Image 1 (cartoon, helix red, strand yellow):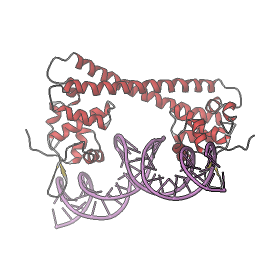
Image 2 (cartoon, chains in turn brown, yellow, blue, green):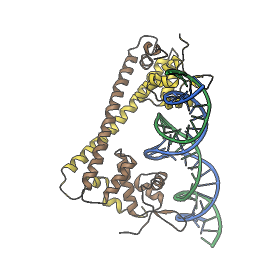
Image 3 (tube, rainbow over the protein chains, first blue to last red):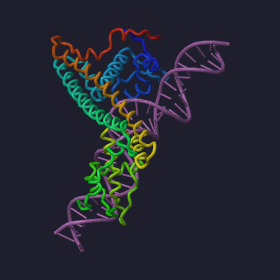
Image 4 (cartoon, each protein chain N blue to C red):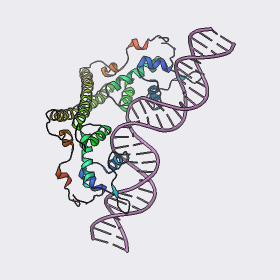
Length: 144
Length: 144
DNA sequence: CTTGAAGCTATAGCTACTATAGATATTAGA
DNA sequence: TCTAATATCTATAGTAGCTATAGCTTCAAG
């Protein structure tokens, strides 16, 4: 194990995390506090780089910082940990699938709108019309 | 055309927008200023309700408030407007498709991870391992 | 006329960063 | 060793799109 340390810029280059982001992760307690040089500059070890890469990969998979934090906490342990990790991951997967469903519905509706627009011969805009409320909505009784 | 006015709570119920959200839309200049009663309460017309429904539908389709604002601005006009509306919509559709692609990749990776976890017999957690950096990443030369 | 619901403003909080200003530290070259 | 360029430091504010809170005032029903 090396005792070699790295400045924040080098860590940034090695992990793909921006310097500000690294400081931010530290400020919210997600990344362990690095030591400091005599002058007050942060001084990271290889372990910090490993942590940051873990965080970055988690983020790339869409985990929230809260979830990443949980996974990081589970990472060092053993025993029932694997089942807990699986749960976090499965819950997140369900979430991602839900988002895909929502976005697919949006995409289908938007495709329809664009297609209608392309066939449009009238002076009015079919997209605007599909966003605009029907007359019905304008006729609400004030005491309704 | 009616001169009947509505309180913010009624407008909320008619549009599905929360009271706070309606005030927020006004504060950022997205929704026209409503008149006020003598006591200072907001007093909305049917036109405001139409605007809010337009905004809500736009949001449901994933348009940003900025895009909704553009569409609202284009909605009252004629001429080349339809082409501009189509452009905004097509750009947003491309964006939505990009998000679907990203999320699909995430989902595939997460499915893999969960599947590996389910077949797991070893004491270590395959999910944690796939998030953890390889040894290579820990062996960076300090001056790299 | 009273009372409870609804509305008001201003402010702060949420996620996950990103950007800025103005000061200090470090490092490479002369 | 000195200097100049670069890197880093802190603190603060900004981004989107709301949501929530506190402490008031107004409105509407009985």
